[in-house]
Image (cartoon, rainbow, N blue to C red; front, side):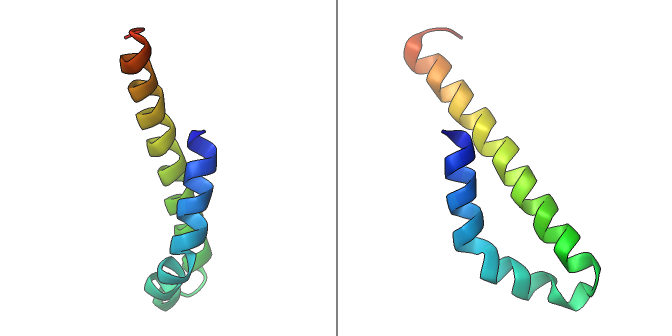
Length: 58
């Protein structure tokens, strides 16, 4: 679930991310990749914590 949410966020924000990182030249693709991976990890963790609170596992 977290991966799907992160992919959707990444796809929707890709044009803005690319425009913001374009001045970095060759590093722009690395920055976009880092941002998408960070978003995936953050959303995955948020979904895991929320799921634990809802099910009473945490």
